[in-house]
Image 1: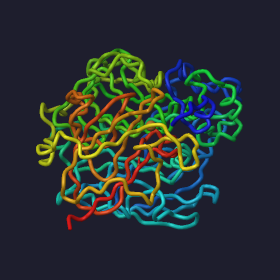
Image 2: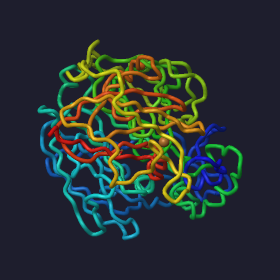
Image 3: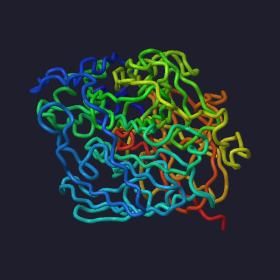
Image 4: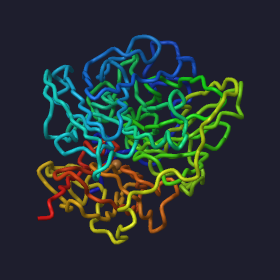
Length: 521
Ligand code: C2O
Ligand code: CU
């Protein structure tokens, strides 16, 4: 890129989220400045946390339907949902058991075609919900088949999620609500004695902006909607974060703003998914109490890691064990706040700062029987993890450039996404080491997701990975200038996959590349 882009040009293409002031949602259901609200403010921590419906059968039906979803006080919010709820149902299936998910596209024609990605799963390319192939037209259906097998064995248990992955429309479609959880259950966690059953709670965290009629406002992917004046008024300076509509002003947990959950005074397992389009969250408890991370997005860590705060970017997941036993008959809140120096994550303001917001409250009841334990060792890494080369086979640079027409765009190795182009051909059965580098000149983080397989982080900026990143993962934080080296083994499936930034406006504006797993002969 040779000419500097104006702030407005960047905004128009969803590019800006650099340094800047932030003060998100200090009042419940806070709206954009200049957007009067017709409703009374929602009482903070007044609504119970809903638990999504669990679907557990081998044959699962998801209807992509428009629905009026009650979220804020006042009128419901028209969303595009799976089965009428936001988030959609949690699919929970035993590892190694073939699962067929039939998606019926019943959305209005303006939605265009859909393609549903089971994020984190080791799916064949035809079942991977990729942009541009096997798209589901309005009125049509498609069945995705997942064997839930990997390298000759049942897939490792993990908290995955499914979402639309349409070319140029992933941001809009997930913002509209096409999101749900997918748990692969392999029983290892139960055999270890981790909290289970009713003490195992999914927390799907996602922010949205609403207009005065409680309808969704999406400033990034629909710049011509009424919020356009907000974008224009930002001008050339750094926009305050809470005035960029694409980031969302109201944080929802399982679809509800600032809910509460009644818990017993014992250990719980919280499966946290950052399902936001763009923003990281730095999770922490208001009393500063420690909690224990047992899993990443790719399942159990080799050993538990204690935190007092945990940064999760878009698409990252963490399973944490929280011990409420010392808090009988009191309350504590989960919040997202600025990072301190915990866990070695830099205390400097990151280029893409986390949301500053209350998340939810826990009402702790009486002390309860608690047979759960957190063993000192959880799950060993797969065998291939021991023989990875530290020397990168490939380098992927995430930057700002131009598209074919010369317009500003997000790029990987200087190029925007083209489904026909293959940028790497790893050989089936081989292991490779990849270097991911944030070379973006305007200081901004990226969160890089790689399809098909899980990866082991070998280094971050030449240093050993942080303890909670030293397990299998498939989404990686890349702060400005950072270099992360990861390794993995390509198993089972030949064909085309992608890697991309999971800040969806970056993905939709080019920051995606294709690789093809090829046969050794
Ligand atoms: Cu969750 Cu390719 O995405
Ligand atoms: Cu990005």
